[in-house]
Image (cartoon, rainbow, N blue to C red; front, side, top):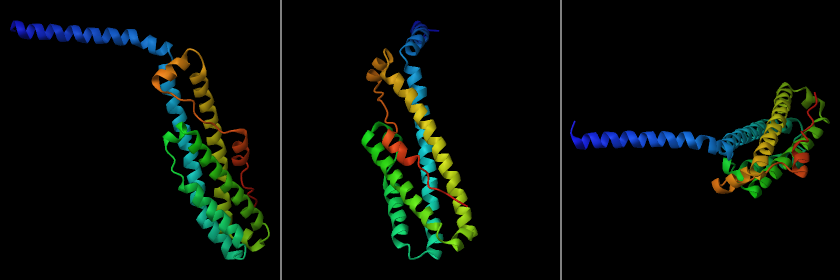
Length: 208
């Protein structure tokens, strides 16, 4: 081996050893400042939010068939049916991404839209009680069952999101990890307020 190759090989070995040493030293420092915790809690929050959005979308997907089924028996309930359709259109028109968690205003608009859809669905379910033939329709009963299951999953997903955001925000606000949050750009994430939580936790009354 030539002197030049020997030098390069030795230099590479030294640099690799230095990199490994720095990694070993950095690991406890990163852990102490909460960086690893931020990474894991941020991912957990995004996953919980994705499930909330997924369940809301599942509910939205049920609505067209539900409206059409009700219309077949209660076509003169035009205002109620149109209110549900408008509320669904408003809720699904809002673009939701993981970045919504860093935008309190976008988060608020999304939750308001979902709350209005919940209210419209509640009125539709109340109206359906006045139509015995509709209540006896098997398609309607199947849709009711699916809606009830989806509302339950929305509740569970929302509770998991609330818990994950609470854990994340405690980390973001507490010393000394709040310093890490500022340096790394981790922001406090929006959570359900008392007002919008009350609205979206009132699931449409599904009766059989």
